[in-house]
Image (cartoon, rainbow, N blue to C red; front, side, top):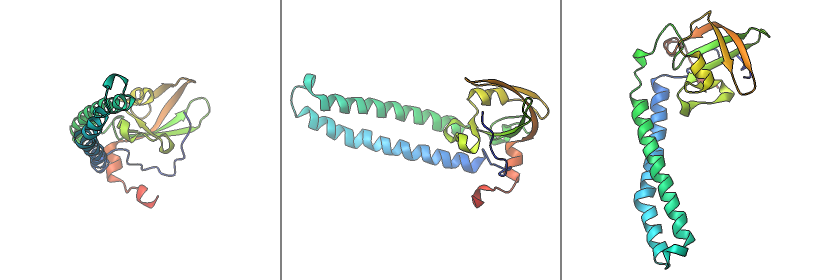
Length: 182
C-alpha cells in the first residue's frame, strides 16, 4: 500500500481517449492472434502431421497447445473489447468514487497521503498509482465520497484512511493533463 508522490495531482486515469487507445491495443493483439490462428498455425500443424505418428510427435502437441491458447486468448479479447466498448462515461457518477476517479487518502495512523486512480484492469500500473476497479482496494473504494472513512485490506495489512479529496473522471477530463509533460 505504498504512497505515491502527488506532484501529478491531475492524473487522467480514465476517459474516452484512454479507453479508445486501450481498445485499439486489444484489437491489434486480437488481429495478430487471429492471423496466427488462421494462417500460421494450420501450416505448422500440417508440417508436423507430415512428420508421421502423431501419438509420439512432440512438435505437433506443442503446436496444438499453442492453438488452444491462441483460441482462448482471442475469446477473452473479444469479450473484453465488447465489455470495454459498452462503458458509458456519462453514466459514471460525479460525486463518488468510480472508474476514472483519483482519490487522495490520509492514513489515520501515520498521517501519510496515498493517491490512487481507478482504471480498467488492462490499464493497471501500480508505479503510477493506477489500480484496477476490480482489485480488492478498488472494490473497497467504489461508491465512497470525500470525508468517508475507508478500510483497505491487503495480504500484509489492514489500514484505515480518510478520503481527503476525490477527483472524479469528469473532473479529471476537464483538468489539463500533466502526462503530456512527462
